[in-house]
Amino acid sequence: MSEIQAIQRQLKIKAGAAKRLIKEHILYRKETEDQQRKVAKLIAEGIPEDEWDLKNAKKVLDESERMIHDSATRLAKAAGDLGDLIIAAKQRPELAEVPELLNAENVLKEGKEFETDSL
Image (cartoon, rainbow, N blue to C red; front, side, top):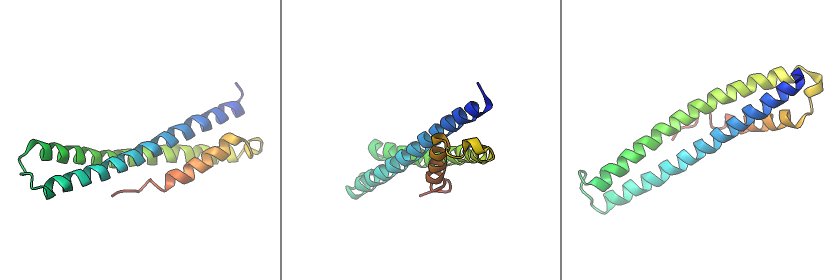
């Protein structure tokens, strides 16, 4: 495999990984919002603090909030790796217009929106 093909393959792999992490981050944010509503509903219904349903809902909410931070951290690392690879690929004129590079740039742009995202 030539060096150009290897770079194209790495662009595709790293862009795919970043895209997966973006989806994961969005899902954790949605899950956290759902859990916040569930906890608020249980509290509004007057469920005692020591009731299993409320304790469990708070536990799930805490875990979801931790996963938002974790997914944002992993996304930032993946975006950094992808950005470095894009910079290296742009130094090669024969890669200037390949679809893998253009896709990777779009994924990186989308990923930058979520890097420092928190609730």
